[in-house]
Image (cartoon, rainbow, N blue to C red; front, top):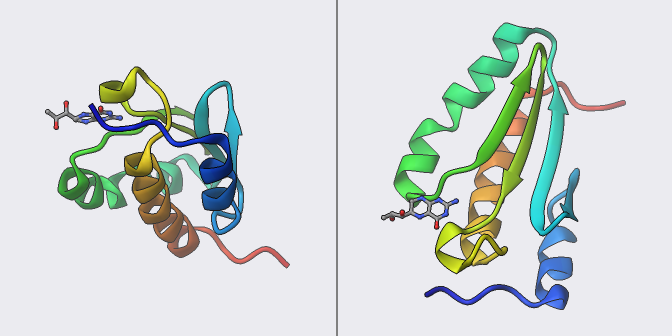
Length: 102
Ligand code: H2B
């Protein structure tokens, strides 16, 4: 079984993941897009990374919003380095999909 990260390790990972937080035992992020279509396009853009990493997000789409929640099932639904690796990939895709904030 892969080892869950310690609180200090999660905190360190979050330092380089803007917009992400640790909430209810998971790495979380919420993004708002210009439209429903843009939200779904973002999700579709992540498919190759997700397949390559073989690590799958829990996510929820409501209109133009996507909420992402990452835990590792193989670690009793705790946060592991696999979640951090996936968060980094998703963050790159978010940066590409969202206009920069002023
Ligand atoms: N996704 C997540 N979020 N956690 C896992 O433990 C996990 C996964 N395990 N995707 C993978 C698939 C595993 O079931 C396969 C066999 O590698």
